[in-house]
Image (cartoon, rainbow, N blue to C red; front, side):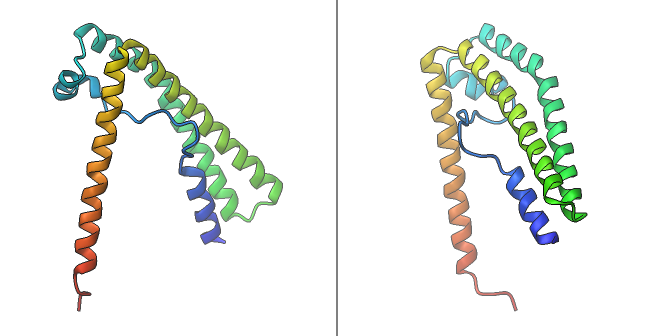
Length: 153
């Protein structure tokens, strides 16, 4: 039962790729000189994006905490051999919390996008895609080197 509980919890934690906004660089990307320079971000745009983030952050924190709470309740119910109806309600609560967090994040990204010119946005998305590709390449090279090694004695 613990394996099933873990598998179900994992499935509830892994975000769906449906309707996901483009991923932006991690953290406060608008404060990074290299990113700001590469997309020609102005000081006014940076201040506005910071304002959007500051306004949204409490909501994101609350929604993330709510999701984690609901995931914990689901895991407890699964490990406690709760009935199907209870588990179904817990799964629904997890998914509703996840949807609320995703909605808040998407709306924040949309607000940030509206501060940028279309070419700035496109460049920012391309930068993120390039970073992701470089990370995947490094991972694949690392994985390839690990597989080439003989097993440890």
